[in-house]
Length: 267
Image (tube, rainbow, N blue to C red; front, side):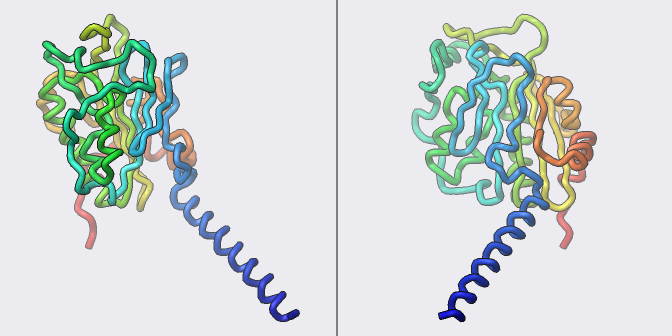
C-alpha cells in the first residue's frame, strides 16, 4: 500500500514537470502568441469598434464607416487548403452589427468590388469558416484590378508562407486618409483610400513584413508595396502584435525583406 502511495505521488510530480516544461517550451518559442487573441492589434485611439469573433478570424468593425477597422487571423499550414468552396449566395449581412449596415444593395451599379479582408482561400478547411468570410463585416469596397491583382498575389504568398514555415499571423484592413471619403450605396459605406496587410512569422528566425496598397489598379509588382510593420503602424495609428517580446518586436517590425520570405527552404 505504501509503495503504491509513493508511486502515485511520483507520477503526479512527473506529470506536473512535463506540463510545466512543455508549456514553457511553447512560450519560449512563440512568446505570448499562443494565447488565442494575443495576436490581435490595438486599434488607433478613439476608433469606434465592435469586436466579432469568427471561426477563422477576428474582426474589429466600425459602425460609422460600415467597414472593418482590421481583420486578424492565425494561418496554419493545415488551413491553406481543403475541400470547401464558395457557397451559393455567398455574401450576406452581418446581423450582429447595428443597422444601418452594409448590404448587397450598396454595391449595385458601382465600380467597386466586394473585397475580402480575410480571404475565402484561407478558409477552405471548414464550411462554417468559409461561409463567414462572406459576411459584409469582412468586406471593403475595393478596386476590381487590385482585388484580382496584387492583393490576390499577396494572399497567395501568405498561404505559401504558412505552408513553408508552418504558421503565420496576419492582420489587414482599410486605410482612411484625413480627407472626405467616397461612400457608396444607400447605407453610405465608406470606400478606403488604401489597404494594409502585416504578416508575422515566429518559427525559425522571427520575421515580419507589411504591405500598403492604394485602392487603385495595383498594377505594379508585389515588392513595390512592401513596408516594414513599423511603417504600417505609423500610417494606421495601430499597434500590431503588442504581446510579442520586446527584443523580437524590435527586430520583426523595423525591417521588411521580401526575398527573405520568398527564398527557397534549405534542404
